[in-house]
Amino acid sequence: MELFDVYPLYNITPVKGEGCYVFDESGKKYLDLYGGHAVTSIGHAHPKYVKAIQEQVSKLGFYSNSIKNPLQKELADRLEEVSGVQDYSLFLCSSGAEANENALKVASFHTGKDRVIYFENAFHGRTSGVVAITDNENIKAPFNLGHKATKLAFNDTDPLKAEIEKEDVAAVIFEVIQGVGGLDEASSEFYKEAAEICKENKVMLIVDEVQSGYGRTGDFFAFQKHSIRPDIITMAKGMGNGFPIGGILIDNNISSKYGMLGTTFGGNHLACAAGISVLDAIKKENLMQNTAEISEYIKEEAARIPEIKKIKGRGLMIGLVFDFEIASLRKELLFEYQVFTGASANKKLLRILPPLNIKKEHFKSFFDALKKALKSQTKKIEASS
Image (cartoon, rainbow, N blue to C red; front, side, top):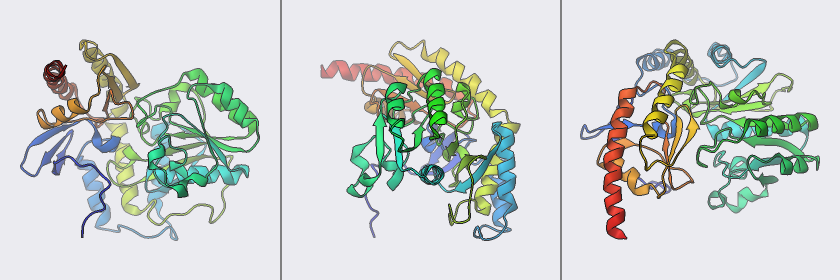
């Protein structure tokens, strides 16, 4: 049987990971500066992560949410402690798209309304409700187009206020730092005004921290820099270091009822064991502090490279902007220098999303490779012109 062909694949087969590196089937070592879309938060095969999963699966890997699972409460308490957010409740699921779907559902239940406002260059997932609020028409099937969703310009509260005053909006959702969209971040004034407009009109503010959360920006959540309090916070990718887990934090002012949300695999024993080990590593290894320090180093080194025209993002959610499209550069970094990097909707932006325990020496080798690759790219551009 053939696999359904929806992914363009590089001809590389990783079989092993260790820290910030992955190894292919021939033993070749690659520096992982992409972490599989910001998923690998504490490094490949982190020993405490591996031990936590091994010990849990040897006891009980799964049972449904019809029984008590104390690991869920332990994860919730640890999350509150490490993140610093308080007076929320946790619902666990299995992915970022599922987290955002459930967030929209909670908002609609709470408000009794059904329209959602999202923003240009947003990416919130591929399932039915959240792909409708993702700014990419190419991935929307006719089935997805029946949702009441309104796209607005990012970083402009005037149209936002006008739409909310129509009194049919259940929720406003945004990524504080847009991931797939190209690492754009609006002003603090925008976030604060948007939060205030939502509060005044009893509209739910949902902050999508699926990619930017879990210490990736140097804060635990990206929104914390802007001193706002969302009604609902969604999270996933870095939450399980590769084990599928997602969740939403729901303000305690929002009431729950039996049957309102549900999931088969969300919050299972293995997922919770993985999630707890990630939070322990973030705290005990000071990974948010490391993220902030390494980010400064990246900015200093990038500023010395004239081909880099702009640096976007925060922490270890970084975009390096060039004045040419970077597809060829990414391939050269991967196949000639064995460095994984990412792309985005901005075809001139190289996306960096490494494990949070990465060190300066890893980035030194990256910048050495980047300089060599840029010289090669310049020669190719000159030869073709």
